Length: 49
Image (tube, rainbow, N blue to C red; front, top):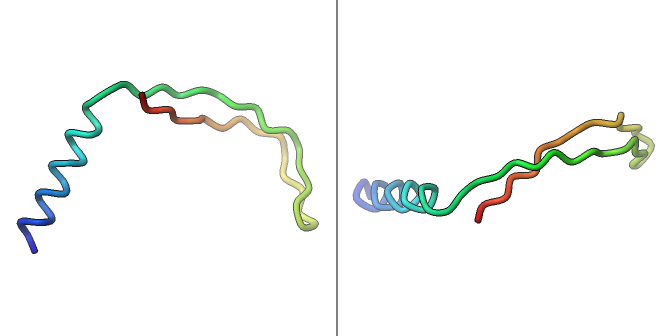
């Protein structure tokens, strides 16, 4: 089991090192969902290439 775990961790590290990661700001307007009002906010959208 430990060997499988470390193999998985190694694969994740390799995957994260390949390509680039960019963060794009996205403006979210005020929304009302199921009676709950969400205030306008900015979230970051992560894109891996």
